[in-house]
Length: 581
Image 1: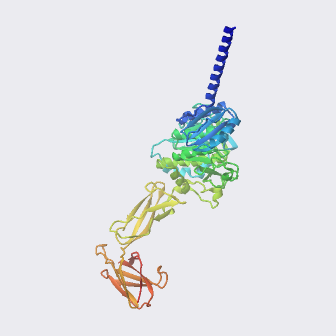
Image 2 (image 1 turned 180 degrees about the vertical axis):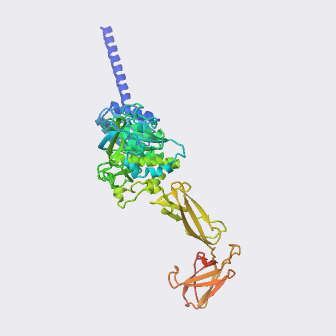
């Protein structure tokens, strides 16, 4: 009996210990640490695999935090991954646990946003036609002619000899289409988790085809098809954001996002990461025909996105095109013919078709100028625009590269100042040339030559157009004689005597002609002022009389020089006041 009892006790103890070990292991699994994945490709693959295994977005939290997150108080954690200690994806075993964890994490230091994963979709496109592909020297999209591609192409050139990579974050690409022959770079399919982003929907192929068509003469423009949407045109926010990060860290020069959905801080952070890396992001405005900012259409409403609305062949805004705050530019989007499956052409309408027209323009700019900042690319787009009075509907205007193939004299040319003081050195006022408020690039778009800019007189700046700008513009500016300060001011009966510093005989090749004394009873010299001219540069004083006694007067002095038939005056000295006796 005692032996059997001991055996039972041992068995019970073993079972209890085993049970405790199992529970301990389960707790450890539930309290899993965050796996930091520093490489964007690996992070994106992890997210994609997670999405494939768990389809419910309400069970997954997307977190932006500058500090490490703490999941120790959260129940039901299945997997947690992070990238760069900023982007976090946490999968839970139920929507209830995810919701509870959201409230806990939001209270933690450094956390910027916590949201449930959800659906995004590529921009809806309206099919109008389909026909077989055939070879032609013309562009398939009428938009290429509308925005002046062929007029600008000769100036885009291949002078910088660099490869320009456009990441199209969409439904993939039909890489067998002849329009993409030899122009695809390595990319990734985050739907199937492989490096073959074959398009199962057609949207990504059509969007990429527009860029290919507009840049057909630039074989160095290549495409990175980042597949984030399935055959139904659907994809999760987490996957879209991951696709953007993939494009950034795989050296894309620009990104096209013909997609949209509800506001997502997670996607916004990814877009901002692109702009921080100076990778411009071109975004479709959306096809609801409503105010995109009120709708909070993401990523179109993000302030730093380059948001593109759609026009038709009449160059009027398409009725479906979203508008409002955040809209930047308009481009062709209605009845756009581009690549389809199996070497065909298809015609679609939508702001999805407008965005790649703008992205194609950016490719031309990069080809012409070499490395450009996002700000410089936007500057070029802005000065290319045909402006419209209704900025709410048209943003900065309709993109038209013909405006970049123009005479320099038709631009807004300004000097930093139109008059300056003689110093004995050549004076060179800064020249700025702009259109639509956006500056041209000195050295690339124009050069400046100065003449007669050493001595007192009228000097000139000649602005010469370069590249796609032609002709000359001339601007004049004056070089004025050096002024002189008042040395003393003494009262007299019903007057005063003013003395000033004598000008050096070496102040110019020509001596000054003389001086002027001006006085008035108000400090601004706006009324009742009198001016007395004194000839001869050697004079250093002047007595003024016949003034009103007991009154206060303000006095100032300047020099002047006669050059030919013109007289040039210096700036007035600092005024001094005196009360006459």
